[in-house]
Image (cartoon, rainbow, N blue to C red; front, side):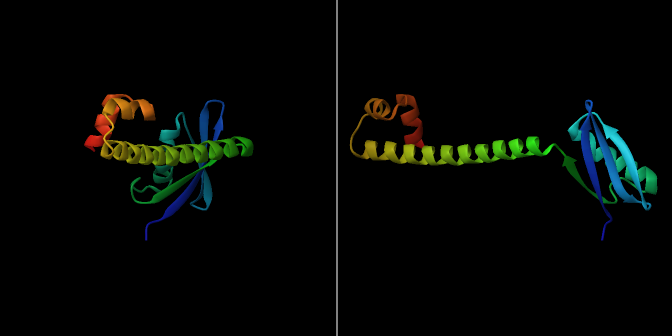
Length: 128
């Protein structure tokens, strides 16, 4: 089983301060300018401290963010998921309506006018 380390990152004055606990019974500290560099920097610090290759262990990064900000982020993500689900449902219902209009003999122009889409979009939906 590969060793596993937990790194925590805190945003401070434009940098991410990174702490990894449990490395040689101590903590290792490093920093990164961007969020996409946090794991790399944590791995580098751990590897240096343990004198092992940086791909010989696993790292999980957690972010310490203000509670109010984290709640807002969570709400934004939930709203995005709801919007994506609604878009999928709208697309499915629109396609069903277009197919039924076509079966009943409506022209693509008339179907588009009834649904609020261009005749070209109606043709695209019928082609799928």
